Image (cartoon, rainbow over all chains, first blue to last red; front, top):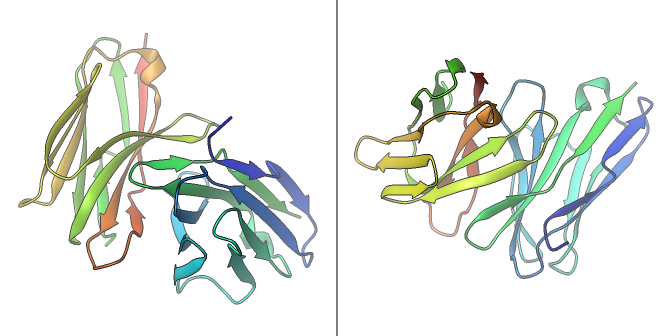
Length: 110
Length: 111
């Protein structure tokens, strides 16, 4: 499978716990994006990378959210001290020209 | 007001009907994507446009840069076209490839 893969696909956690999501983009894609999507809404921008450089981060993103792409390949998105409002689908996409999305990681915070 | 607006938000059509979904944006863009998301499914890119018109099967996408408007048309609609259709605008500022998404149009095609 040469598409964008995300792991885990589902995560249920208790409020206050930390969670980490991983995204493996299409190998030759230098741009990688993280989005969050809640029911009935379009994807909301979180952050994006060009190679290993994090070029932009949403002002809406609190300090509890951090993302890395250490070698310009896979990326991780960590949420610390999760809150119920963090429950959403977290989408990763990669691009060279066309945009390709992963299946998403669904987070439920109890 | 969102920088990328779609209309309608919801659309129900009978099988075979011609469908149009509209996207208007207020920012300068370098490209616009039309995406499809099935219920519980991932997002698939249908088109990437920077000018003019593209066609793929029963789907046609057009963009008017001067009017900051794009449309997605579905000819001879089918129940399997039922999905959420999202337009995403890619920023024009130098060096940026950030996308701004519309909230989506939920299409239901009835048999």
